[in-house]
Amino acid sequence: MKRFVVAAAVLALSGSGAFAAGAEGSQADIARLVHQIVRQLHGCWNPPRELAKHPILVTLTFSLNRDGTLAGPVAVKPTGSGPVFEAAAQSAVRAVRKCTAAPAGPMRLPAAKYQVWRDIEVNFDPSELFDGAEHKADSSYE
Image: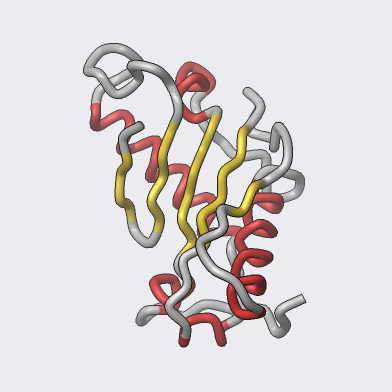
């Protein structure tokens, strides 16, 4: 599985052979697809501002249906523990759910590349999101 770093997120996309030139598209096509996913997820992510003070990285894995809706549960990889990590993980899971359901979703991705974007792994780093950018923050850790 090949990884692309875009903004504050790292995505691993599925698709056997999808990264070979011509198999499912060029590297530039894949990079554009990753950018689309990251842009949509970040538009739905609203973590508590307090999380920016902590070195936290939340890794989620999930699958999408062809129409861009969530195909099953969102899994949180065990990359941390404690209440701060839990708050970050909950906010990241909310972002995925929000982006894959109405009214914000479903995610808008090219159907022709479904085999590439069907399974997604993404890292959420709150410190990167708030680094020099204005962002409306959640008022609670829920």
